[in-house]
Image (cartoon, rainbow, N blue to C red; front, side, top):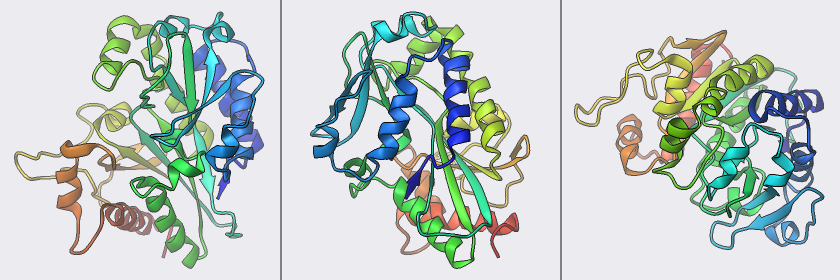
Length: 305
């Protein structure tokens, strides 16, 4: 697997984050974090623990097995996000893009996956913890049996390669920051920091413009509403045992020039499992549903034969 292989796009994303999200001049943190993720993509946590970054420290969780980049609020004294340092578990996932390292096809398909937010379970007040969506930069984290996303990506890569295609996946969150805990994060951001929240969608829109995906896969209602609006798609209903536009490759939803495929969040818990189960065919695991539906969508788009 290759991470963030396009230096031009990488610099464009870094500039976007500084200018539109953090609203500050570069302090070196984002540049260093991308370099660390690329350099240590396939290293175990024993290596991550030995790293001494210039602009922060590496925070490895023995329980979660993820390696995060912890930076102090002093580095963000001129940033519009400075008020968020008053909360614990403050985090941001930098967008990343992934491609196979053994696929030489020049026929490239670009898929953007938009998730909900950069969930954190640790972090002291006065610190920000940087990661990547689904922790894909961290070998020991992404290879855990419970981590579903890399199984989905690997399954799509396998089918694409068999058809002489190459798929690049771009991963990002709609809610660009996380605070406190899963129950309080969005509520606190919207109640106390609406100006910061107002930058989330414009940032995501510019990510779409820079990456130019043929297909956008949204995970859950928050990501779907961000691109399509509350009334822009048909929701699932566990009460009525219907999936609406979820896992429907025949849907005609679009955002700008990209097709949109709505899926349940693969780690959404009890609330989303019925949606996944309704989409399953006999004998399928959860990840098989996503692989099959994404491939079906690409075929309907005439991107894979």
